[in-house]
Image 1: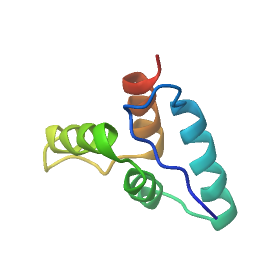
Image 2 (image 1 turned 45 degrees about the vertical axis):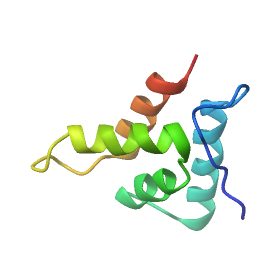
Image 3 (image 1 turned 90 degrees about the vertical axis):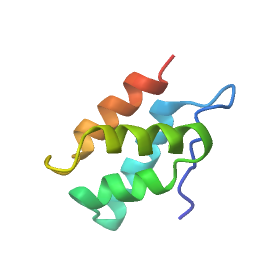
Image 4 (image 1 turned 180 degrees about the vertical axis):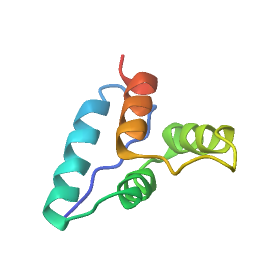
Length: 81
C-alpha cells in the first residue's frame, strides 16, 4: 500500500481525497482508534505538518486523545477550499 501524502500547499491537492484514501487503508489494515490519527498525521508534510503540530499543541496536555472524527473534520475545515 502506498498511502498518500498531503502537503497543504500544492495547487490541485484534494483534502477530501486524502481523507478518503487513508480511511480505505485503515479499513483494509483494521486500524482503529487513536492509531488512525497518528498514522494519517505521519503522511502530512510541509504546511499540513506544521498546521497539525500547532493544532495538536494548542489543544493542551490534559485533553482526551484526538479522535478520527475530530481530526478529519478539523483537517477538512482547514484545507478544503
